[in-house]
Length: 269
Image 1 (cartoon, rainbow, N blue to C red):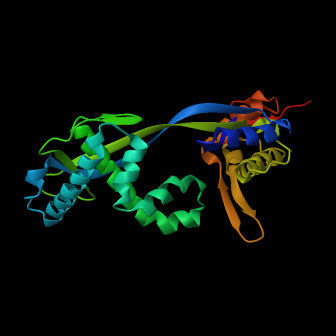
Image 2: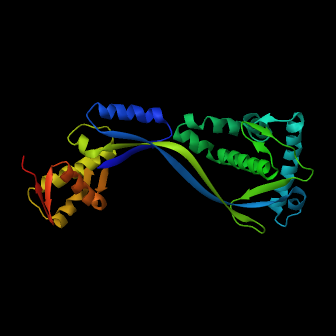
Image 3: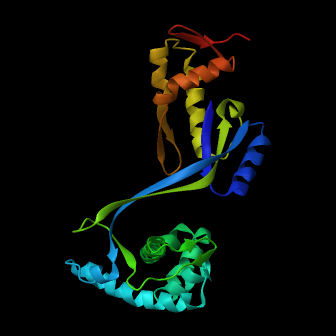
């Protein structure tokens, strides 16, 4: 029975954990997977001149802000192509350079730092999303280097958190590579492990095996697949009922138990 122990974009981190588990005899698998995130917003798109006259005052004000940004972008592209990273830095430098620096350092931040900067980072992300929409709608070539020419009356897209007149729902689905570490639970039974989730699962498996001495009916034994573990400052309610059948199959495959219909018992050695 395989337990998904960790998922991370940091492969080296998972390799270290896998190595420590192998040292105690655990069977582990490290798999490359594709993760995804879905986010829904609303977008108002159109010519700059049109959105400056939008009925929604906030959209009209945002369009006027974009008019100033576009003039700044014209200066950036006056010399032709520009590196994407340089473009974003210059674009945000007149808006919120500190926020962009925070965004770049996010992977090295702790949770408290992230919470403190969350609102600022959201604003920066919003600006970057709108910049990328601007580049796409005005047919720029976007890669490591950005190439293109800004039209006289360019297309702009303004993101909103709720639906307004003229807006469309925008569904953003981002796919990114990640790594998944799984461990064969049966290979670590009775061994010291650092993972709490793995330890709690082992406790329930041990509880099932212990009560096999008294109960050999599968339906009654299922009741022992959940319980409370008391630790110094907390109580942990563990529920393995939904994976009870999987646990039994794994115990049978490992030749620890014998199953016959609804009856189960410890296999004689």
